[in-house]
Image (tube, rainbow, N blue to C red; front, side, top):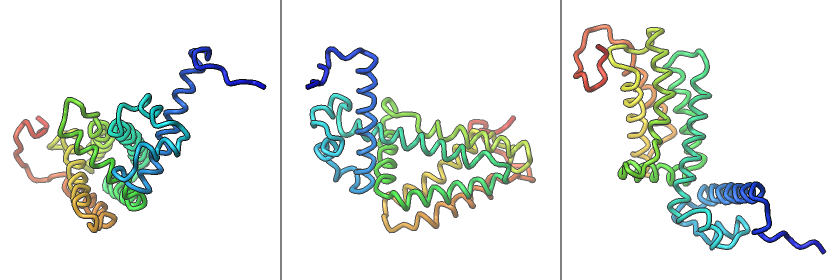
Length: 221
């Protein structure tokens, strides 16, 4: 009978691969459980059972359940980055791309409400402790700024303010809409998020009349 090789005798490369695969399995089952039950209702014991590991093994990979949520949030944000990149790669007008992105995001939130809620709350908690926060909004702002910069070159987007500042305002408006949904589960997010994007599209259109903005608000000199 072939007995399993003791952990201490497994070559370092294979041991690291095993550790990575186990961590990915825990993350995968955690995503499923949180999407089904919500983060607060999901226990470490349930995650361990679904991943076929002992609860103690869970803590070998994650310092705490809260640490796991940080990892889940990072994965979801990475997926959102890919979603943004996919929507912003065509040659459609800036307004169409922003509204299409918002409709897609609203649809995903509607389908995965419990997971989306847990991730959004973690992002809000992170923003309240800057020393620990992952640069979530920075990573999401970058592709939007590139889109808006491209729109400025095509005279679709106002050029009196720089693209980075406009991207901050776009994210701020969308974030405000999502915050409304967090505070009220009945809030019609599927309808309101595209409407917010439409409002933003109007706000970033070229300004024909001269307007004055303070330099620290992103005015283009």
